[in-house]
Length: 150
Image (cartoon, rainbow, N blue to C red; front, side, top):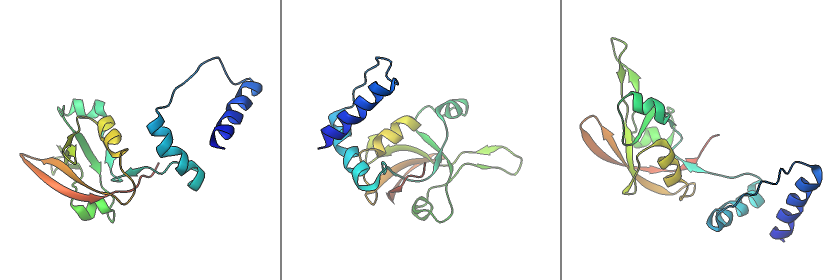
């Protein structure tokens, strides 16, 4: 039945003239994870820590080459309750780096993209252990994943 829906949609695109002859492939593991969510919720529900992460370009400018810099942590979020620290401004206006997420459940994270990819393997409500660099020390923070806001 799902194949029929997908096939009908693709056929519609071809009839509507929106196809430019460009094909695409989706890994079957992605289809198996996402299609049930689309059917049940009408959207993809992604698990995440609901914090703002610095783009990789900004991380590079701040000389962070390994990990994902936490920029903002909403006050009453599960990430805040777990103890994640945001990036702030110091007294003189200098940037004080927040936590840098360097691993999820012992899987190394070198960038924002790698963090998002690592979290894609989990569901809302799953508990993960984030390894964070805070100054000169590394901490393990257990966090329950929330539905990621868009």
